[in-house]
Every structure is written in structure tokens, then in C-alpha cells.
Image (cartoon, rainbow, N blue to C red):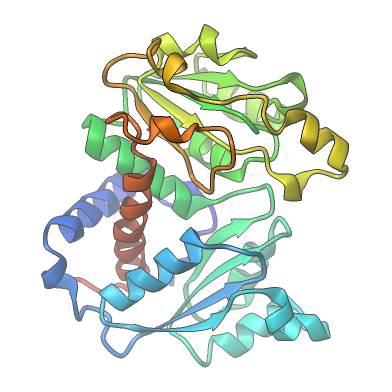
Length: 305
């Protein structure tokens, strides 16, 4: 039995196989329409979510399975004080696979250690978001044709952004990937990622504060929102929330084939006027999220079609 807690739980070869499967699902959806018939997915979301939860549910329904679960801690026994360990032990007798999102780092790992069914980390605090990373990798590979030999800019909240942390962990395993880290001083990437991931792997990177200083050299730009829920005081959030806004004027400085990705939801960091630019692929990215989660469910359940 396997779980997905971190993007590093799969080797590069396994990731490539998973992404190949997701592309086949995209191109041949009918082939997989009953692959998970009579299988149940539990979605245990202790934290609000739209895309991640609904894409997991859509993925299982597209595979012919069914879904049960809860969409907030207040609507579960966590409100009564039940531990994650006890919850997953109970869920294991109800479902065949579980996706869990929790505000505390390490909660998914705890669940996996006590579970009798595969556990998927759907986001744990500011730590990891591996299925978003799979979505990001599928999007870049499908639209660029490769995951190596690219320069990617990560812009916005690089301190608390779990999507950013997971993506860096995943991409350092590919050849000739360069990072441009674009953030204000207060939201720079954590020291452990700079030292233990980027420098430890000999990865070329630079840190800049202005998006305008970097956008022209990028093959992909990964925008993120400044997350109110990760801040300890409102003043810091208000001061930094509109630090970066990607608009048409900035897009004119970018390469003609640069991709713009965003894990969503966006607030003000991408102007609506950018949506019509063919390089803006964040809504397509959300669709890729369904395909890759379908592929992941099949892989963890050991179902071959």
C-alpha cells in the first residue's frame, strides 16, 4: 500500500508514468469511465477548499466511483476533539482511499501512519501540496513538451506558499531547471528550501524583488496569492497583499511562449485583463488537476485499465 504525502514519494520515472496516464485519461475519458466502480473516496477537508476538494470528487466520479467526506473541521468530529489518528482509523473501514487537507503541517503523515487505506495529502498547512504539484508538472509538460531545460519564476508568497515549496522539491530532480524567486523580503523562500533543496542540489537560482526585472527571461511564471490565513496580523497582510499585480503591460515584457500558472484562487495578483492572453493557462491548469488526480487514484489503488 502506498500513500502520497510529498512529491518525493514518487521517483522521476514513476512521475513520468503517472503524467503519461493523465494524458491518456485526457485523450480517452470513456476508457476510464468505470475503472473505479464500487470504489469509494473519502475527502477529509479540515480546511476550506474549492478546487482541490471538487477536483478530487470530480476525479472519482469520472472514474465511476463514489465520494463521501466532510468539507470543514466544524462539520466533523474534530469539533468534538477527535484526533486525526482516530478519524482515519474509522474512515479506513468506510472508504477505499482518502484525500486529507489539514491546517497543521504533518497531519497527512500522521494519518498515513495509522491508515489501512492509501492516503493522499491534499495540503498540510504551509508545508506541502503534492497533488497541486502533480497538476503543475502535467500542465508544464503538456504545454511545453518538457520539464527539463526551463527557467521558471515563482512570484508572490514564497514563505508560506506550500504549492511553491512542493514545486521546487519536484523540479530540482529535472535537468537544467533554473529558478527565479520573486518576492518581497518578508515573503522570501524559507532558509531550509534555499539551503537543503536548491543549494544542496546545485540548482541555479536568483532572488529578485521586482517582477519587471525577471519576467523577460522566464519560460514559465508561477504566480501565487498572499495568503491572509497564514499571517499572524492583519497589518502585514494588508501591506503585502497587492505587492505584485501581473497585468497586460508586464505581459508585454515576457516571451511569446511564456506560460502563466496560478494554483488559484487569485485575489488581485493577476489582472482580469490577462485572462484572454493565450499564455494564461491557469484555468486550463485546473482542468489538468482532474486528470492527474484520476491518474493518482488509479495508481494508488493499483487499478490498471
